[in-house]
Length: 176
Image (cartoon, rainbow, N blue to C red; front, side, top):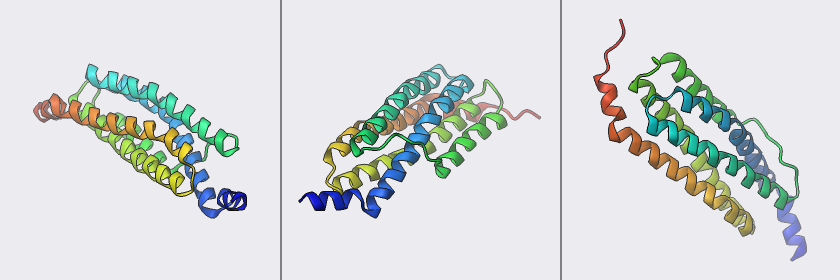
């Protein structure tokens, strides 16, 4: 059985799993700054608070990933995640292209944030499944709360949008 366990640890799938962890570690590290900027760019108080809460959760997500790295016996290392870099860039772009203090900006921030959340939901869900497949249930259990928090953030953002920001944005006039 030991050789089977060792084989799994040195498998191509394990290497892929590790790379995915490194990309998420990069993302969570950078997302703290992105969420801070988004909270300051948002107009709606509830949206600002949601970004701040998720920023605090993101610090915990990073710590959980560090715990996973420790369990698999490697130092935490960030690997650029091109997909999330693109989504972060999109977030900066919506700030640049929308008028400060508008609901339109808040709508754009919510959409940009939800794109990131959906990417993270897909990534964490897949890593949980892979960890279970590789017989690493303890690692899957470490990642489950993060997946749940990502889903909860997505739901919160939808609720904030539906509770008025989207409707408010339809009433704003273009600046000519």
